[in-house]
Image (cartoon, rainbow, N blue to C red; front, side, top):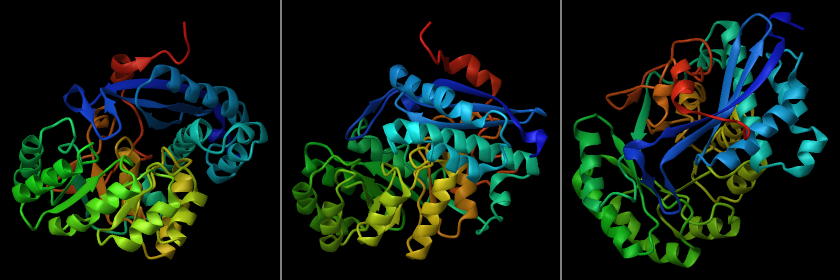
Length: 378
Protein backbone atom coordinates (compact mmCIF):
# COMPACT_ATOMS: atom_id res chain seq x y z
CA UNK A 1 0.00 0.00 0.00
CA UNK A 2 1.29 3.44 -0.96
CA UNK A 3 -0.07 5.55 1.87
CA UNK A 4 0.50 8.76 -0.11
CA UNK A 5 -2.22 7.70 -2.56
CA UNK A 6 -4.54 6.16 0.03
CA UNK A 7 -8.08 7.37 -0.66
CA UNK A 8 -9.51 9.58 2.09
CA UNK A 9 -12.60 11.13 0.46
CA UNK A 10 -14.99 10.46 -2.42
CA UNK A 11 -16.92 13.65 -3.28
CA UNK A 12 -19.54 13.63 -6.06
CA UNK A 13 -20.45 16.79 -7.96
CA UNK A 14 -22.89 18.00 -10.60
CA UNK A 15 -22.24 20.86 -13.04
CA UNK A 16 -24.71 22.12 -15.66
CA UNK A 17 -22.84 23.97 -18.41
CA UNK A 18 -24.55 25.89 -21.26
CA UNK A 19 -24.02 24.46 -24.75
CA UNK A 20 -23.16 26.37 -27.91
CA UNK A 21 -25.70 29.12 -28.63
CA UNK A 22 -27.65 28.07 -25.51
CA UNK A 23 -29.42 25.28 -27.45
CA UNK A 24 -28.51 22.45 -29.82
CA UNK A 25 -30.62 19.78 -31.47
CA UNK A 26 -30.07 16.42 -33.10
CA UNK A 27 -32.64 13.92 -34.33
CA UNK A 28 -33.60 12.74 -30.86
CA UNK A 29 -32.72 15.45 -28.34
CA UNK A 30 -32.85 19.16 -27.69
CA UNK A 31 -30.25 20.26 -25.13
CA UNK A 32 -29.59 23.63 -23.48
CA UNK A 33 -27.01 22.50 -20.90
CA UNK A 34 -24.55 19.65 -20.63
CA UNK A 35 -24.35 17.77 -17.36
CA UNK A 36 -20.85 17.20 -16.01
CA UNK A 37 -21.62 14.65 -13.32
CA UNK A 38 -18.76 13.06 -11.48
CA UNK A 39 -16.46 12.77 -8.53
CA UNK A 40 -13.40 14.28 -6.90
CA UNK A 41 -11.31 11.68 -5.09
CA UNK A 42 -8.84 12.91 -2.46
CA UNK A 43 -5.77 11.09 -1.18
CA UNK A 44 -3.85 11.22 2.09
CA UNK A 45 -1.05 13.43 0.78
CA UNK A 46 -3.20 15.91 -1.09
CA UNK A 47 -3.53 14.48 -4.59
CA UNK A 48 -6.95 14.97 -6.14
CA UNK A 49 -8.39 13.01 -9.05
CA UNK A 50 -11.36 14.17 -11.11
CA UNK A 51 -13.63 12.00 -13.22
CA UNK A 52 -17.02 12.60 -14.76
CA UNK A 53 -19.65 11.36 -17.14
CA UNK A 54 -21.96 13.37 -19.40
CA UNK A 55 -25.72 13.87 -19.20
CA UNK A 56 -28.46 16.07 -20.59
CA UNK A 57 -28.44 18.06 -17.36
CA UNK A 58 -31.57 16.54 -15.84
CA UNK A 59 -31.02 17.08 -12.14
CA UNK A 60 -33.08 14.16 -10.83
CA UNK A 61 -31.27 11.73 -13.13
CA UNK A 62 -27.90 13.28 -12.34
CA UNK A 63 -28.52 12.72 -8.65
CA UNK A 64 -29.05 9.02 -9.26
CA UNK A 65 -25.49 8.91 -10.59
CA UNK A 66 -23.96 10.85 -7.71
CA UNK A 67 -25.90 8.73 -5.21
CA UNK A 68 -24.46 5.59 -6.79
CA UNK A 69 -20.96 7.07 -6.57
CA UNK A 70 -21.20 8.13 -2.93
CA UNK A 71 -23.31 5.33 -1.48
CA UNK A 72 -22.37 2.29 -3.59
CA UNK A 73 -18.79 2.87 -4.72
CA UNK A 74 -17.47 5.30 -2.11
CA UNK A 75 -17.41 2.78 0.77
CA UNK A 76 -15.47 0.34 -1.45
CA UNK A 77 -12.76 2.93 -2.10
CA UNK A 78 -11.97 4.53 1.25
CA UNK A 79 -8.55 3.47 2.49
CA UNK A 80 -7.62 1.85 -0.83
CA UNK A 81 -4.58 2.79 -2.93
CA UNK A 82 -5.91 4.94 -5.74
CA UNK A 83 -3.13 3.75 -8.06
CA UNK A 84 -4.41 0.16 -8.01
CA UNK A 85 -6.79 1.19 -10.76
CA UNK A 86 -7.57 -2.10 -12.45
CA UNK A 87 -8.01 -3.96 -9.16
CA UNK A 88 -10.39 -1.27 -7.93
CA UNK A 89 -12.28 -1.32 -11.23
CA UNK A 90 -12.84 -5.06 -10.80
CA UNK A 91 -13.80 -4.60 -7.15
CA UNK A 92 -16.49 -2.09 -8.07
CA UNK A 93 -17.68 -3.83 -11.24
CA UNK A 94 -18.01 -7.21 -9.51
CA UNK A 95 -19.59 -5.85 -6.33
CA UNK A 96 -22.62 -8.12 -6.17
CA UNK A 97 -25.27 -5.72 -4.81
CA UNK A 98 -24.48 -3.12 -7.48
CA UNK A 99 -24.11 -5.60 -10.33
CA UNK A 100 -27.44 -7.13 -9.40
CA UNK A 101 -29.30 -3.88 -10.13
CA UNK A 102 -27.41 -2.96 -13.29
CA UNK A 103 -24.44 -3.89 -15.42
CA UNK A 104 -25.10 -0.89 -17.69
CA UNK A 105 -26.86 2.44 -17.28
CA UNK A 106 -26.49 4.40 -14.05
CA UNK A 107 -24.16 2.00 -12.25
CA UNK A 108 -21.90 1.72 -15.27
CA UNK A 109 -21.56 5.43 -15.98
CA UNK A 110 -21.02 6.10 -12.28
CA UNK A 111 -18.18 3.57 -12.45
CA UNK A 112 -16.87 5.44 -15.51
CA UNK A 113 -16.55 8.64 -13.50
CA UNK A 114 -14.79 6.92 -10.60
CA UNK A 115 -12.41 4.99 -12.85
CA UNK A 116 -11.42 8.17 -14.69
CA UNK A 117 -10.69 9.92 -11.41
CA UNK A 118 -8.46 7.04 -10.35
CA UNK A 119 -6.48 7.18 -13.61
CA UNK A 120 -6.16 10.94 -13.10
CA UNK A 121 -4.58 10.33 -9.68
CA UNK A 122 -2.33 7.58 -11.05
CA UNK A 123 -0.97 9.88 -13.77
CA UNK A 124 -0.53 12.77 -11.34
CA UNK A 125 1.29 10.52 -8.88
CA UNK A 126 3.65 9.56 -11.71
CA UNK A 127 4.10 13.22 -12.67
CA UNK A 128 3.01 12.45 -16.24
CA UNK A 129 0.16 13.30 -18.59
CA UNK A 130 -2.02 10.25 -19.07
CA UNK A 131 -0.98 9.67 -22.69
CA UNK A 132 2.64 9.30 -21.58
CA UNK A 133 1.72 7.02 -18.66
CA UNK A 134 -0.06 4.79 -21.19
CA UNK A 135 3.11 4.40 -23.24
CA UNK A 136 3.51 7.63 -25.14
CA UNK A 137 2.03 9.19 -28.26
CA UNK A 138 1.62 6.95 -31.32
CA UNK A 139 1.28 9.87 -33.77
CA UNK A 140 2.98 13.24 -34.05
CA UNK A 141 -0.30 15.06 -34.65
CA UNK A 142 -3.89 14.02 -34.00
CA UNK A 143 -6.41 15.30 -36.53
CA UNK A 144 -9.68 16.80 -35.29
CA UNK A 145 -13.03 16.96 -37.03
CA UNK A 146 -15.66 19.44 -35.86
CA UNK A 147 -19.29 18.60 -35.09
CA UNK A 148 -20.35 21.85 -33.45
CA UNK A 149 -21.49 23.53 -36.66
CA UNK A 150 -23.81 20.78 -37.84
CA UNK A 151 -26.85 20.74 -35.55
CA UNK A 152 -30.39 20.10 -36.80
CA UNK A 153 -31.50 23.24 -35.01
CA UNK A 154 -29.70 25.19 -37.77
CA UNK A 155 -31.03 25.65 -41.29
CA UNK A 156 -29.24 23.79 -44.10
CA UNK A 157 -27.68 27.02 -45.31
CA UNK A 158 -26.56 27.97 -41.80
CA UNK A 159 -24.95 24.56 -41.41
CA UNK A 160 -23.26 24.92 -44.80
CA UNK A 161 -21.95 28.38 -43.92
CA UNK A 162 -20.68 27.17 -40.55
CA UNK A 163 -18.96 24.14 -42.04
CA UNK A 164 -17.35 26.24 -44.78
CA UNK A 165 -15.95 28.57 -42.13
CA UNK A 166 -14.60 25.64 -40.12
CA UNK A 167 -12.80 24.32 -43.19
CA UNK A 168 -11.65 27.52 -44.87
CA UNK A 169 -10.98 29.77 -41.87
CA UNK A 170 -10.29 27.54 -38.86
CA UNK A 171 -8.32 24.90 -40.72
CA UNK A 172 -10.35 21.76 -40.05
CA UNK A 173 -10.10 19.05 -42.69
CA UNK A 174 -13.35 17.40 -41.69
CA UNK A 175 -16.80 18.13 -40.26
CA UNK A 176 -19.81 16.12 -39.15
CA UNK A 177 -23.44 17.15 -39.48
CA UNK A 178 -26.66 15.84 -37.96
CA UNK A 179 -29.41 14.19 -39.99
CA UNK A 180 -32.29 11.86 -39.08
CA UNK A 181 -35.27 14.18 -39.42
CA UNK A 182 -38.80 13.10 -40.32
CA UNK A 183 -38.04 13.94 -43.96
CA UNK A 184 -35.14 11.90 -45.36
CA UNK A 185 -35.29 13.76 -48.67
CA UNK A 186 -34.70 17.01 -46.83
CA UNK A 187 -31.73 15.44 -45.06
CA UNK A 188 -30.24 14.37 -48.39
CA UNK A 189 -30.60 17.96 -49.55
CA UNK A 190 -28.92 19.12 -46.33
CA UNK A 191 -25.98 16.82 -47.01
CA UNK A 192 -25.75 18.04 -50.61
CA UNK A 193 -25.78 21.68 -49.52
CA UNK A 194 -22.93 21.11 -47.07
CA UNK A 195 -20.87 19.04 -49.52
CA UNK A 196 -21.17 21.78 -52.14
CA UNK A 197 -20.14 24.39 -49.58
CA UNK A 198 -17.02 22.65 -48.28
CA UNK A 199 -15.81 21.17 -51.56
CA UNK A 200 -14.83 17.69 -52.62
CA UNK A 201 -11.57 17.47 -50.67
CA UNK A 202 -12.92 18.07 -47.16
CA UNK A 203 -13.99 15.14 -44.98
CA UNK A 204 -17.74 14.93 -44.33
CA UNK A 205 -19.59 12.57 -41.98
CA UNK A 206 -23.26 12.40 -40.97
CA UNK A 207 -24.96 11.28 -37.77
CA UNK A 208 -28.55 9.97 -37.43
CA UNK A 209 -28.36 9.47 -33.64
CA UNK A 210 -30.25 6.19 -34.05
CA UNK A 211 -33.43 7.86 -35.27
CA UNK A 212 -34.24 6.04 -38.50
CA UNK A 213 -35.51 2.48 -38.81
CA UNK A 214 -33.99 -0.08 -41.14
CA UNK A 215 -36.39 0.44 -44.09
CA UNK A 216 -35.80 4.20 -44.02
CA UNK A 217 -32.04 3.75 -43.89
CA UNK A 218 -32.11 1.21 -46.71
CA UNK A 219 -34.04 3.70 -48.85
CA UNK A 220 -31.51 6.47 -48.13
CA UNK A 221 -28.36 4.35 -48.44
CA UNK A 222 -28.16 4.23 -52.27
CA UNK A 223 -27.94 8.04 -52.41
CA UNK A 224 -25.11 8.46 -49.88
CA UNK A 225 -22.17 7.52 -52.14
CA UNK A 226 -22.91 10.65 -54.18
CA UNK A 227 -21.58 12.70 -51.26
CA UNK A 228 -18.37 10.75 -50.52
CA UNK A 229 -19.09 10.41 -46.80
CA UNK A 230 -16.53 9.18 -44.28
CA UNK A 231 -19.30 7.37 -42.43
CA UNK A 232 -22.94 7.42 -41.36
CA UNK A 233 -23.09 7.35 -37.58
CA UNK A 234 -25.74 5.51 -35.57
CA UNK A 235 -27.90 5.01 -38.67
CA UNK A 236 -30.56 2.99 -36.81
CA UNK A 237 -31.37 2.17 -33.17
CA UNK A 238 -28.14 1.62 -31.24
CA UNK A 239 -28.81 -1.91 -29.94
CA UNK A 240 -30.19 -3.38 -33.18
CA UNK A 241 -27.41 -5.81 -34.00
CA UNK A 242 -29.22 -7.75 -36.77
CA UNK A 243 -30.29 -4.49 -38.41
CA UNK A 244 -26.76 -3.14 -38.44
CA UNK A 245 -25.45 -6.39 -39.89
CA UNK A 246 -27.95 -6.22 -42.74
CA UNK A 247 -27.19 -2.55 -43.30
CA UNK A 248 -23.43 -3.12 -43.33
CA UNK A 249 -23.88 -5.87 -45.92
CA UNK A 250 -26.02 -3.76 -48.22
CA UNK A 251 -24.71 -0.19 -47.82
CA UNK A 252 -21.55 1.18 -49.42
CA UNK A 253 -21.08 3.96 -46.86
CA UNK A 254 -19.18 2.85 -43.73
CA UNK A 255 -21.01 2.67 -40.39
CA UNK A 256 -19.76 4.34 -37.20
CA UNK A 257 -21.20 3.16 -33.90
CA UNK A 258 -20.47 2.92 -30.21
CA UNK A 259 -21.35 5.97 -28.13
CA UNK A 260 -24.44 4.16 -26.82
CA UNK A 261 -22.79 0.77 -26.32
CA UNK A 262 -21.98 0.27 -22.65
CA UNK A 263 -19.79 -2.81 -22.45
CA UNK A 264 -16.85 -4.62 -23.94
CA UNK A 265 -19.22 -7.51 -24.60
CA UNK A 266 -21.49 -5.32 -26.73
CA UNK A 267 -18.56 -4.12 -28.81
CA UNK A 268 -17.39 -7.72 -29.21
CA UNK A 269 -20.78 -8.72 -30.59
CA UNK A 270 -21.05 -5.82 -33.06
CA UNK A 271 -17.45 -6.09 -34.24
CA UNK A 272 -17.41 -9.87 -34.66
CA UNK A 273 -20.71 -9.71 -36.59
CA UNK A 274 -19.27 -7.17 -39.04
CA UNK A 275 -21.90 -4.61 -38.05
CA UNK A 276 -19.67 -1.52 -37.96
CA UNK A 277 -16.56 -0.07 -39.56
CA UNK A 278 -15.57 2.79 -37.21
CA UNK A 279 -15.52 1.89 -33.51
CA UNK A 280 -16.73 4.71 -31.24
CA UNK A 281 -16.25 3.92 -27.54
CA UNK A 282 -16.97 6.70 -25.06
CA UNK A 283 -15.47 6.46 -21.58
CA UNK A 284 -18.67 7.93 -20.12
CA UNK A 285 -20.66 4.92 -21.34
CA UNK A 286 -18.19 2.08 -21.14
CA UNK A 287 -16.95 1.95 -17.59
CA UNK A 288 -14.19 4.52 -17.82
CA UNK A 289 -10.66 4.50 -19.18
CA UNK A 290 -10.09 0.89 -18.12
CA UNK A 291 -12.86 -0.52 -20.30
CA UNK A 292 -12.24 1.99 -23.12
CA UNK A 293 -8.71 0.65 -23.50
CA UNK A 294 -10.04 -2.90 -23.69
CA UNK A 295 -12.51 -1.91 -26.43
CA UNK A 296 -9.76 -0.12 -28.35
CA UNK A 297 -7.53 -3.19 -28.11
CA UNK A 298 -10.40 -5.30 -29.42
CA UNK A 299 -10.84 -2.96 -32.38
CA UNK A 300 -7.11 -3.11 -33.07
CA UNK A 301 -7.27 -6.90 -33.14
CA UNK A 302 -9.89 -6.65 -35.90
CA UNK A 303 -7.90 -3.93 -37.73
CA UNK A 304 -10.72 -1.44 -37.25
CA UNK A 305 -10.13 2.27 -36.59
CA UNK A 306 -11.17 3.76 -33.24
CA UNK A 307 -12.98 7.06 -33.27
CA UNK A 308 -13.67 8.07 -29.67
CA UNK A 309 -17.04 9.73 -29.20
CA UNK A 310 -16.08 13.03 -27.69
CA UNK A 311 -19.06 15.30 -27.06
CA UNK A 312 -18.32 15.60 -23.36
CA UNK A 313 -15.03 13.79 -22.85
CA UNK A 314 -12.52 15.42 -25.15
CA UNK A 315 -10.41 16.23 -22.11
CA UNK A 316 -9.63 12.54 -21.61
CA UNK A 317 -10.17 11.20 -25.11
CA UNK A 318 -7.37 13.36 -26.47
CA UNK A 319 -4.95 11.47 -24.18
CA UNK A 320 -6.36 8.10 -25.23
CA UNK A 321 -6.46 8.97 -28.92
CA UNK A 322 -2.84 10.06 -28.90
CA UNK A 323 -1.79 6.95 -26.99
CA UNK A 324 -3.69 4.16 -28.74
CA UNK A 325 -2.49 2.91 -32.15
CA UNK A 326 -6.04 2.18 -33.40
CA UNK A 327 -7.11 5.81 -32.99
CA UNK A 328 -6.99 7.91 -36.15
CA UNK A 329 -9.23 10.96 -35.67
CA UNK A 330 -10.96 12.72 -32.77
CA UNK A 331 -14.18 14.70 -32.69
CA UNK A 332 -14.17 18.26 -31.35
CA UNK A 333 -17.05 19.93 -29.50
CA UNK A 334 -16.03 22.79 -27.19
CA UNK A 335 -18.98 23.00 -24.78
CA UNK A 336 -17.22 22.33 -21.48
CA UNK A 337 -13.51 22.76 -22.24
CA UNK A 338 -13.19 26.09 -20.41
CA UNK A 339 -14.19 24.40 -17.14
CA UNK A 340 -10.77 22.73 -16.95
CA UNK A 341 -7.32 23.79 -15.83
CA UNK A 342 -5.83 22.48 -19.08
CA UNK A 343 -8.57 22.74 -21.73
CA UNK A 344 -8.34 20.80 -24.96
CA UNK A 345 -7.16 22.94 -27.85
CA UNK A 346 -7.25 22.50 -31.62
CA UNK A 347 -4.81 24.43 -33.78
CA UNK A 348 -5.26 24.43 -37.57
CA UNK A 349 -7.20 21.19 -37.44
CA UNK A 350 -4.95 19.26 -35.04
CA UNK A 351 -5.15 18.70 -31.29
CA UNK A 352 -2.42 20.08 -29.08
CA UNK A 353 -0.71 17.34 -27.09
CA UNK A 354 -1.57 17.81 -23.36
CA UNK A 355 1.39 18.61 -21.13
CA UNK A 356 0.18 18.68 -17.54
CA UNK A 357 0.23 15.58 -15.29
CA UNK A 358 -3.08 13.76 -15.07
CA UNK A 359 -5.97 12.90 -17.36
CA UNK A 360 -6.89 16.49 -18.19
CA UNK A 361 -9.94 16.38 -15.92
CA UNK A 362 -8.92 18.84 -13.18
CA UNK A 363 -11.75 21.35 -12.89
CA UNK A 364 -11.22 25.04 -12.30
CA UNK A 365 -12.62 26.40 -9.01
CA UNK A 366 -14.73 28.93 -10.88
CA UNK A 367 -16.44 26.11 -12.79
CA UNK A 368 -17.93 24.99 -9.49
CA UNK A 369 -18.82 28.57 -8.61
CA UNK A 370 -20.66 29.12 -11.91
CA UNK A 371 -22.26 25.76 -12.68
CA UNK A 372 -22.50 23.57 -9.55
CA UNK A 373 -25.83 21.98 -8.62
CA UNK A 374 -26.84 20.37 -5.36
CA UNK A 375 -26.10 16.64 -5.43
CA UNK A 376 -29.10 15.93 -3.19
CA UNK A 377 -32.35 17.80 -2.50
CA UNK A 378 -32.12 20.38 0.24
